[in-house]
Amino acid sequence: MERIAFLIEDTGEHLGALLNPETVIMSRTAGVEPRRTSGGRLAGAGLADDPLLFTGGGHTELRLDLVFDVDLAPAHLPVTDVRQMTRPIWSLAENSTEVEHQRRPPSVRFVWGRAWNVPGIVTEVAERFDRFASDGSPLRSWMRLVFVRVGQSADEEGGENYELAQRLPPVDLTAPPVDSLQVLGDGTDEGLQPAEPGGESVPSMPPVPAVELGILSWRAFGTPLLWKLLLEYNNIDDPSRFSGPLAVPPVGQTP
Image (cartoon, rainbow, N blue to C red; front, side, top):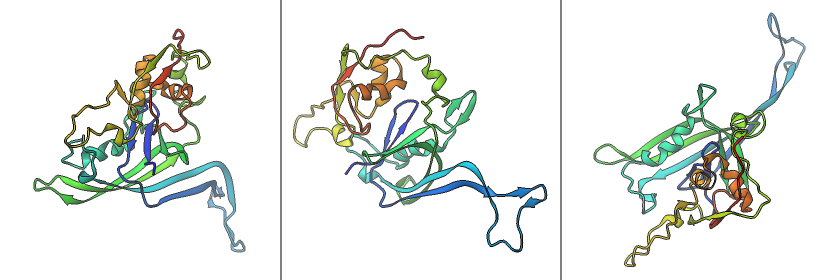
């Protein structure tokens, strides 16, 4: 079964979960609010319900619980504190992105196979630790996360990255490839595992792991922001699972 992942729009960084949640709660609030006058909310003794005013928009959010445990960490990762695995996801709720000299949470895509691909931001995150090492390091984390859908991708016209995108080199998706990129694995942890015990440790490690979309874009185009075009050129629908090599299209001059 495919595992959920969070793709950071600006860099293509791939943050995966160790275990899928058992449930995902999706809720929607319509763009309405009670009508008000200068004296306060408009109401009346003879009304069964408050009059509502349509304001447009609305609010859609996903709530999910994730479990992380040092005993479930991939063999190639020396993890002694579960926060080594959860802090990258925790930071999605930090104001770690700067837009027009203001800090805000990064734009993220919630991806789960081909069934879920939702743009949004992480607005809330909380952890409960219940296993500890002798030095106090937490070993297991129960993480609760609230993901709010945004109405517009940062890369679309009017989005936060739109002006930046105008200064990126143009990519010709119809021309023959000019180069190729070797890719490690298929975007899953299994592709990063060492050889079988007792065998010679010969990693199938080409220059870039499949999960490092931003680095693949940097190698191909000199910027981490064009990873979507690289996947589109190679007819890759699922950014969390694919294999290489990848064909690299030609690029023109930066405007």
